[in-house]
Length: 377
Image (cartoon, rainbow, N blue to C red; front, side, top):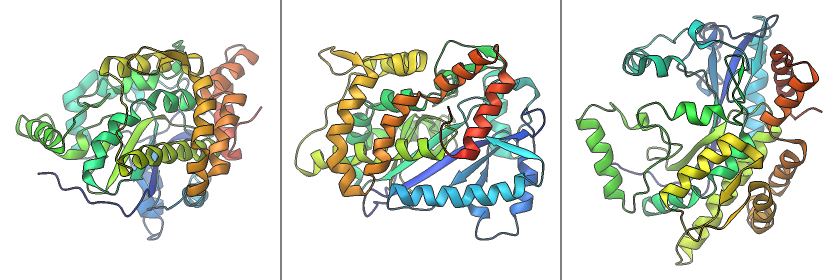
């Protein structure tokens, strides 16, 4: 059995994966262990920065937050303290779905049995995981709500993927995908779209089968795009590419929390949550990975389709009462800013066009945006 620890309400937690770059070349550098060693004496902060698969990556993790402004305050404080270390080491910071020009062949895997086992099993695909994501946890008050909420949120996964898409390059090559990360990450075992189980017992049986057959050694190795996090009492959204700015994190976190609460309200009122057939969910993922903000997504089982940005405009209006309740109206409105100024992949492509395709300039723009905390013209 998998015990689910209920949350008191729609609490929030955010995990932000960040790349470490050489200040001069802007290429990735394997100095995460040096950063973590420098933080070891800071007992108040060190639990908020984690190691990841590759030694060029650290992850900032918030505490349990009640509101979106609290999330941003937490991440801002952590980012400032992280920069106190990285600036002294001659490093820059970047977050995007992929680094524009870094080569996977030259990256160093973090030491540890867990990472060594993953690479030993996945080999070529595992070694290529130079990808960065933004993961958002939303608290759920009862175990029996988790799977209906997961299935319902799959209808909105393309909205989140389009808004966060930030990986149009791979090893210096233009992919013509808005989110190359989305399709790359699903090559790992148990990664990709989740199964749409109706009952918790089905989910338990699935996990049991994986454990017995040796597919996984622990629950968190189920790497779905959306997944239950039973020990934390949350539903975890892992759809989003890493994004370079705190403003975008605020918008995406607000949209995610409002959507979960909106769907949860339907369950609380005795209703049901509409869901898409798995084949439509799969197609929507591909469409927004490929076309990003220009994707035409499938809305329902009747095969109605609409441009994702048009659907977002209407969705924001429907969610505004929820946002007022949650205290994140200003942050939810920032989604319109992303639509107006362009998602990160669009901004990256614009910089490349203005600089003759120079990807160092693209990387510099990502670094500058992260320092500014907002998208730059």
